[in-house]
Length: 489
Image (cartoon, rainbow, N blue to C red; front, side, top):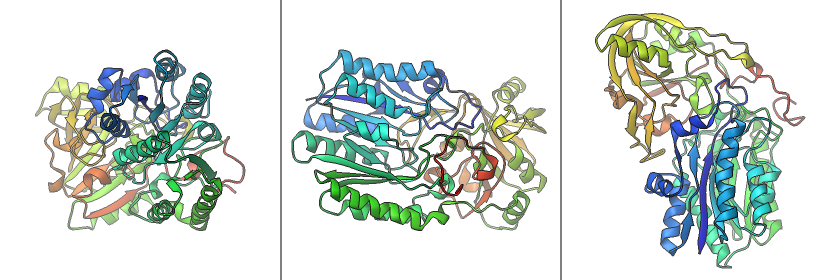
């Protein structure tokens, strides 16, 4: 048996000013051919599960590319052409294949397009019309007709933070292998709920997502249902198919899949008001945090979250925390390569005054660059590299680029040269900060932080600041959503 295995992932925030050239994928992780197996075997990724399944059955594999870029703005045309070209060239020139197993995101938006994954699958079908294609998608994928028309098996993550990526890959791969053996005949039924749900309300250990996942698992327990997935969708994408959807893979009987789909869509619509965050004034939220005597207290600057395409240099929340005099704060992370260079030049122990953050204009929300002038001490410097030991991306080698710790007031700020969401405690521990001994842990994150920081968290407070990952729909102007989508109807 010959299998084509590939990974191509990017969560595109169409409101983000952060560019997405091919180098952004190289910065986070782009591997080709044999290097794919070396990089991902033993990690918590779907493609690692595909590799293990291939080993288990003695299949020959071709791995043209495995690439992931930190969320940002629309993917450059040249980058998209390169990534998809690697997969298509392998299919065209190294076939035939018995099946393809793909590790995709589901929310990629290339420049001039509204869907990155669907057109890739359609072109694969043109080259190999009868090729079975199994795909794992991120829970935040925006599903489209082009995806469903060309997929054989679709499985979405059931956890957020995404700690079940490998498990999802196994699920997808095992259904596909069963289909190749003639034991099952997958048929897909899917539908959109007409809800532009907010990412902040999609944590799988809280309602309403917790209940939705339970419903999916109940559907999978029914005879004839091979996979049931809820996709919360990615709301920071101004495209027609943004929003919450359900995908069912049934065994041969399409009516079973449709009935299962309708039950899941009914749950989503019944709970539609629960998918939205209730905002509170920033100064009041910080004041409430100040009154908590035991810690650590996790503070979430969710409107500037790299993991959803944020610039990671908005200083609104940091300024308010400093203004109110909170002590014992560890903060991750501000993206500011120029500040890192200034601290490298000054050296560890030096006291300097710098303009920190505020490097990026955000025209989509009318927010100008606003650096914060601070005086403080350079505490530590590092190369920003570590291996993830937490439950998300376990085993992956990651980098935030040259990194520094800047101490000012009662806060130690991790400053990075590459964008990086703090979902793993390594963002602190690799540079000498133990989050367990901090009174406050201030993170530019929404929900993924729970993977690495839940063991330390005694309290959590959401801070509604500024940025292109805002959970306030009134801050974003949409032009391309389907008419009538909630809450805009």
